[in-house]
Image (tube, rainbow, N blue to C red; front, side):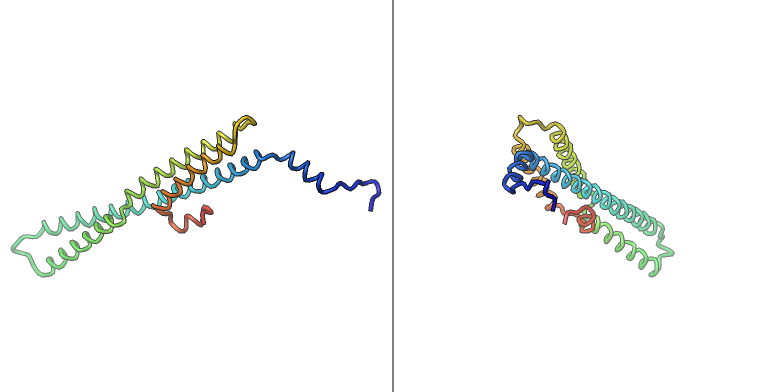
Length: 177
């Protein structure tokens, strides 16, 4: 053991560390954590919006195609050449069109797109405000109040997120679960 080294008591070390790291740094850390959570939720809603957009387009194109085909087949019959096979095709096309249209009504991808778009914008706004606060922090401000205000807004957005839901894969991809 080196005899030149002085052993400093633990109480003094703790006291010095407490003076160096005031409570402000803890809330600054919490603000940065909240900023990352907002970023993850924003990205998750953006991803879900894209997925719902894709399914919305697929369903709408399928509905358009089936409706057009059904209308064409039904209107192309004349009474002289009408046979059982033509009627069977008409029934199957009408059934398929009804199923796809029903799926569009049940899943309502268009509405989900708008909700995810809105939540994406809300998280982005909160993210930008947190970022601005972090970059402009000074000792005169009450950082705890700033954090509490942003955390409350984050929780309100999170309630909306819970109501609409996120795709499970998205939750995993963006570290939400």
